[in-house]
Length: 260
Image (cartoon, rainbow, N blue to C red):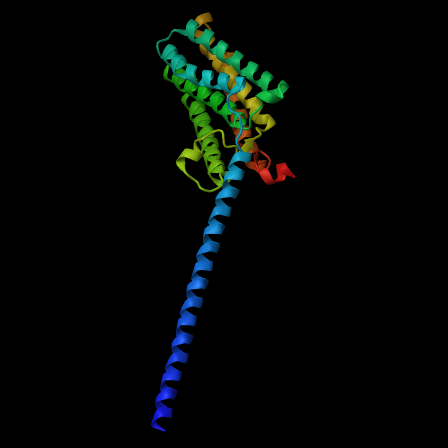
């Protein structure tokens, strides 16, 4: 009986020992499978993100974009000329900058390989930077009233802020500063309203007239003052149009829908 109880103890300890080792082995196998699944999911996520980033990447080295950059580069030069009261030179450079605006628009509309979604942001940004800079400098020279310039700056500041927000929201993860400012990654397309286009034309006309006023001697002319009020009206209407048509003024780029 003593032998039997000893054999029973040995058998039981062997049985429980095997069960314990089996459970441990199973746990290790499950943990290994879980790690493998997590690594596989990470690799798949990286592949999807890389594929999406590749699909939304576009060529930004186009003639219209180059002309926009040239217009941006001319802005500080124009500011210096206006503040130096060199109105003949500033008017000539402004006409040249306006001509590049017409050329890049024509090329982008008529040549498909010269179109880019980033151009839909870059072109109006270049125009606004040029207009705001000239409005500020002309106001400093007492050629445009302060309230009108303040109104234009406020409107454009709101539009720029909205543009930065749309860029952040539409940018797929990972949202890094490098990718945020990488203009080759297309995330949205801007579509200005009709009244906004008309407002830009009116503002450019006022800038040209104000630059020409000291040259041809009609500073503070009655018709120039009428143009101030027209510009203020179109500025307010264009700001309202962006609020009213906010769902149709920009389009988020969806590579999945494009593929379909």
